Amino acid sequence: MIVLAAMALAGATIPTAARFQCGPTVVIARFSRDRVVLNFDGRLLRLAQTVSADGARFTGLDHRRRTEFWTRGDWARLTVGLRTWPECRLANMPAG
Figure 1 (cartoon, rainbow, N blue to C red):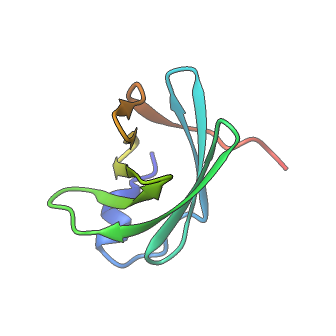
Figure 2: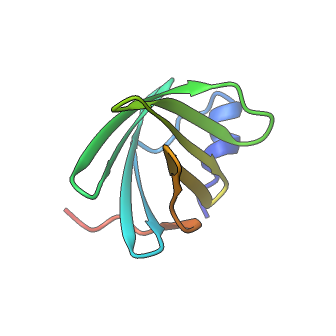
Figure 3: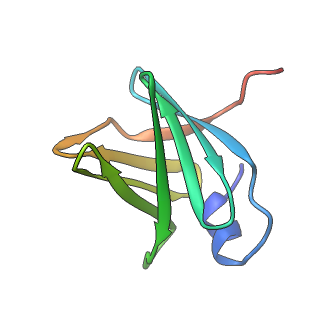
């Protein structure tokens, strides 16, 4: 199991990309030191890392709607505006 949040908090190298299954939606997250870029449903969102009491939390705006992607272990939550996707689980990245 990849523990993204613990690795991020410890300052360790985190995976450059991870695939999350959020209900029927696949979210590809590409991490850098203090940001994440999310690719899902034809969207590309760039979020900055923010303070989190537990896990790694990234926030930003998408067309003036508050956006949050919060990860802890193999779990994540994605919220854009008033919509929150079903619980996200870390899945295998496709080869290639």
